[in-house]
Length: 340
Image 1 (cartoon, rainbow, N blue to C red):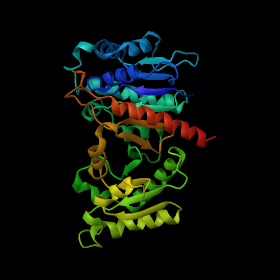
Image 2 (cartoon, rainbow, N blue to C red):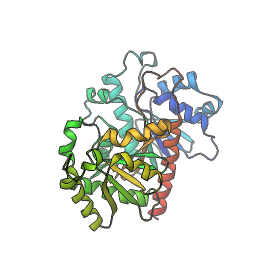
Image 3 (cartoon, helix red, strand yellow):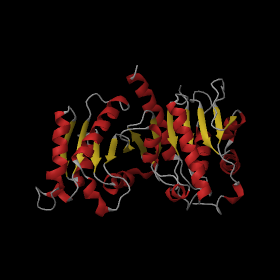
Image 4 (cartoon, one colour):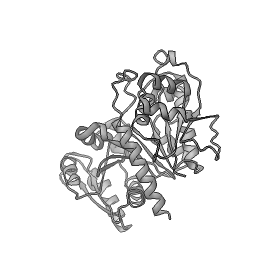
């Protein structure tokens, strides 16, 4: 099944209008079938405010499905799963609250279920508000961990992609003082295994080369300004190489990105959030895509958040969503070829 499922994300964020922007840029002919897991009322308001003629054509042929049902005989190019009944007039007043968190959670769960059932070939998620999810009782405030739980994945890995620059993370949203304790050889090794498999299966790289970054400046300078590289990172790299993974390092982060951009590495493994993501967003913020590795299905997302400061003003750029959508199609097709 070639359908792509998009989850609407936080209703008061930029997700609804970015979906409308995407539809406005896609021709109905030749595009894959799409499913939007979201709220019809909110999407219609976004269409009224931001939709062009092309987006309106998509909606004229759309089929509306309720309660997460997607009948196999629905042939419409666009199916909207109406999973909440929010008030479009109260989006700002209810922003960052429990109601929006619960709705966002429903959209993600439905999208994951459709992909697990094979009804959709890939999942593209729009940004959510972590505080809203927590207020709704969700035990996982971010997409990566939530999708891993929904998919029963042993290890989900966050990979940020900017063209041929690919950067995975060992730790995600942690205070810096907590990061060193999470840098364990077993964790690094398991992440490298997930990366190698995904780089081969989804990205089509026959022999991927992975550069592993150090935690400390200058990768610790042989223990002079940090021992994590010697005691934790280097042993994991040796184990990975013994397992047939072409991993090297630990390399100083201040030069590794230049080397990766020059083609020396197919992907990098960073130790913490800002170390890995900061350089990519500095280069081309609007083209960065978030990919979750280790799931049974392809998942991509724009590399930005809810952007409340510009949401519902018409100022939000849809470039990152377009990049995420295109990459989802590419990875899904590559995985399909790899799996025969």
